Length: 378
Image 1 (cartoon, rainbow, N blue to C red):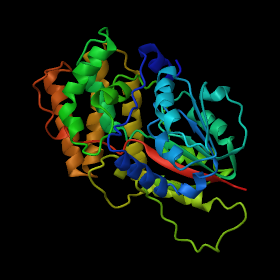
Image 2: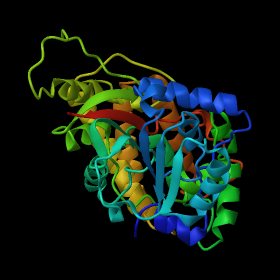
Image 3: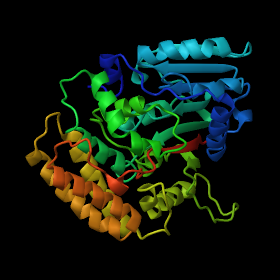
């Protein structure tokens, strides 16, 4: 199975649309993200941009408004591309050459001709994210910028526990739109705690709960290490980078910034667990344990098939219980959320009771996906 594309095609969906009723607010959010990544408008205006996986095109609106000379979009999902064309073509500046192409990324021959290459919400859960990243990096000009996103077991733990419980909430043989409606209602109060959320609840369920996520996660560290021979870190969101070296204290082909970024990521890994707070950096060994246990839980959840029995779920719950002890040393608030989730699983015996309260589990989200921008060395 090809992640994303086959699932989207089979269900005739593209569950990534954004609410743009307030277009100025949408542009302000995208502009802020671009600033954190070092993607200033001057990089785009009059330049060449390639975007992989634009979905419905809502996030591409801001890029298009910066008037690139060339803007090419590639996506393998025809449903999303229909919506992208309807949204973008009428808004295309006269000075921009806009192409929207249906193709699998790996089928497009790499040419290093673009100032900016974007791939948002695409690499994690692919079967071979590192190989796909190397392929996409081949389209970036020397001196150009590559922007991708990453996820790890720590940052998506909360969402994956939602998925685990949801597997008992609706029969898998019901139409997917019916499943999504039931689950959107089940998690409605939980999702409503995210005041800045711009995606509909049903779309979130389709993409994060019902999507099987059979591929591999791909962390910030893995992104950097995959292309470190040719690219240097530029920016991230969330912005966790520290660089205290004197700018003159560099050597030719120095990758110190990349090593520093990986170290900063590992020291702050626990802060991706819960978006509601921040803690001081922790030793690598402690966060390695957190990463290992979280990744095991997420991986084992992704291996479950619809109709999983309590006996199949029990070992995962035991691992969550072990992880709960680790999290208690990081944040009492997050530990309470995990504890309340475990109480629901234990009490209900992995059988849905719609009136059951999730208590403080509601409102716990990790930091989801992280953005990384890198520049190709000249």
